[in-house]
Amino acid sequence: MSVRIWRGCLPGLLAGILVVAGSSLAWAQAKDPHYGTWKLNLATSKYSPGPPPREGTVTIEAAGPGRKVSVTGVAADGTPVTWGYSGNFDGKEIPITGNNPDADVVMLKRVSANAIRTTNKKAGKRTLVNGVSVSPDGKTLTVATTGVNAKGQTVKNTQVFDKQ
Image 1 (cartoon, rainbow, N blue to C red):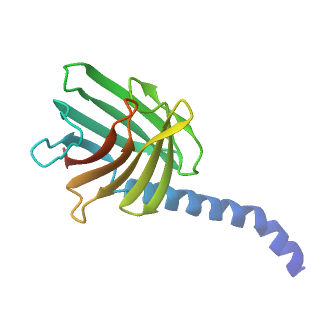
Image 2 (image 1 turned 180 degrees about the vertical axis):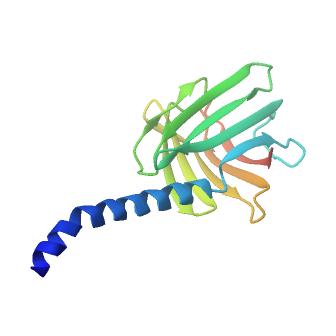
């Protein structure tokens, strides 16, 4: 008799576990310090090679187990910049849409709760790697970029963004 009672409870127990697991995932995503809108602080950012862009804004939001990233701004020459992607932290190539001159795919890796790494490729060749971290107070997002851009220039940038 006790086996029958246990079997009868199993579907309800599994459903309860799935609800709790799903709620925990949603709660964890809501707490991701990267989420939000970030405005480029040109005064504290460093670009090598230059010149720096005129302006930039990054919006990061939840997208399933991963994230959606949208980048807008104005390049140093006045060209509008609009690109983005949506994907998971599974190391797979994610297509980039828009006009990113240095990448057509990106791969995401979570390093810690406050840090991720993105690896960019253009036409199958690795270009730039970004270390993206949020300050402990959640007010500053820093992107440290190294690699070689699509023009063949060695890049070593530190972009600092302020939370909006």
